[in-house]
Length: 403
Image (cartoon, rainbow, N blue to C red; front, side, top):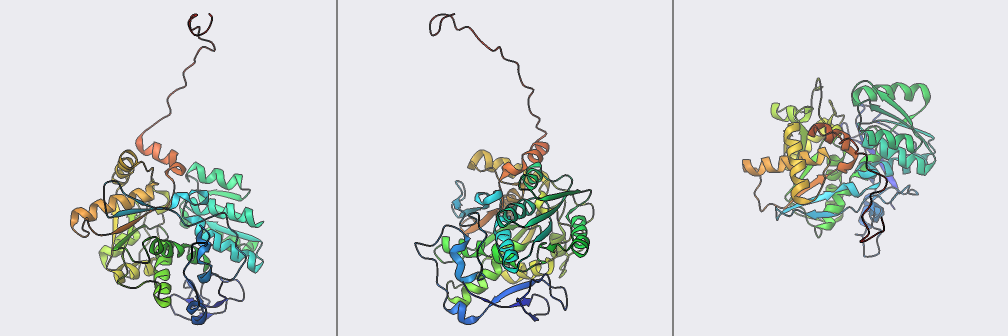
């Protein structure tokens, strides 16, 4: 495992020491990336047959620390039954049922490495679940702040894992403000999206995995449900590292960010040709993970999409639900609403001609649909049937059993 050479600001590119725990760049508040020495990367080796079936198969490109692991990563790449060139990266197989396990495994690993005792994060749901689980595994206190209408599964997980859970009347942006205030007052370390450097390191393993699973080649396009956008940013970092090490070559995939129309700050900025987004007012969508009204890394996301020749697509909740049910009934996959946003976007870009049916595409289902059963049921206007009262004993009549 390589030692960290330094941290680098994504905005001003200032080098920052990694000897002590860091949140954002002290000069400009930009997000920090982990950088390793070129010598260490030169000696990094591709995973072999004996590599663990987890993200830690990429230990040669992850920080030198004792891992806090629950078996995250190395999720399957499933072929679509109807689209020959489409593959689904099924992140529901991660611990706590979502891709958030990757980032939190690295964030909590490094928190324990630095001796931190209290972690806090705002979350639309799944990041809170993951932080609670990994903090419990590491013996670290977790303080979670989630919107009051968060999916019940996320609230239950936080409580079950022993975290300190606060439900907030507002959005993730309101939760973030409370975390920032509490960090100063209570001494929590803030592990918010892109406000510490190691969640990106965990998420970048999605890029390593999809390239390895495709025989160390790039796909033509990657669809990524984009709330905070850490996964998209992490994969782009992975592509850079793999090219530096000679593990992959050729044209990088078109990166396609997908959002819900009810909360589409990045899509709106894309359509306007802006370099950053504006606060999206009155954000509302049943795809809870996409309800991020102003991503901290919006400018990075837009830059990556432009550089890759990709695009940003937003879909209505009605389109998202229709795609979710279509994939459940015809592919046997109960996608999370965020994942169904990506499948709906794929259909749209095929119809528009932006993509061709023969283009090899990887689409991320970022979590299990089972974590959203209350939200999906509401969107379907589905209520549980009233229980029937059955007799405790029904006489069969002497043929099979005596009366």
